[in-house]
Amino acid sequence: MIIEKVTIEPVGEGIYLLRMPLPFRLNHINLYLLEDLDGWYLIDTGLNTEATRNVWEELLASAFFAKPIKQIILTHLHPDHIGMSAWLSERLDVSVKISAGDLALARFLWDNHTEVAGSLYERHWKQFGLRGTVLKELVELRNHY
Image 1 (cartoon, rainbow, N blue to C red):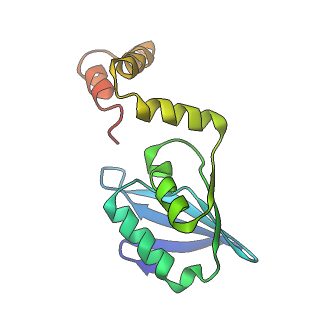
Image 2 (tube, rainbow, N blue to C red):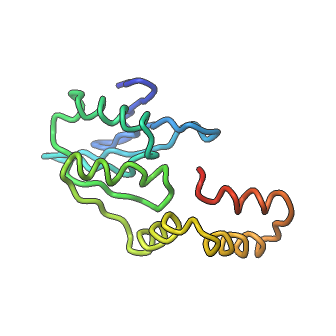
Image 3 (cartoon, rainbow, N blue to C red):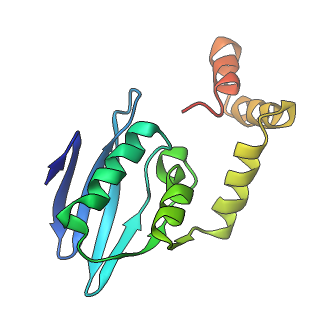
């Protein structure tokens, strides 16, 4: 099945790979859809952009989702994995599951666009030997995917 620039491919019984486009060099993300007898589980949700929202609207209106979506499961905190989770949860009236550690770290990282977050990023990257322009760019771009 192809919708816009998205493909859904079966990869196992009741397991589907959804390639969601991304607007940068890493041009897509692999999300998964798990089907059971009475519904679907979404594994990750894509980046929170209007384009991703439009793709989800098309998908949700398609015959592919004849059964209801039962839950959203997030594998980790990266914005291309969790970005649409709040919107989808509200739109579908389903719960979202994520590990407590990833939830806490995501809240910290995305709620702290401050000097504190920048200094933590800088200290982290310095431990790996980064210096100069590369270090500066990583610190400045910390919340820009």
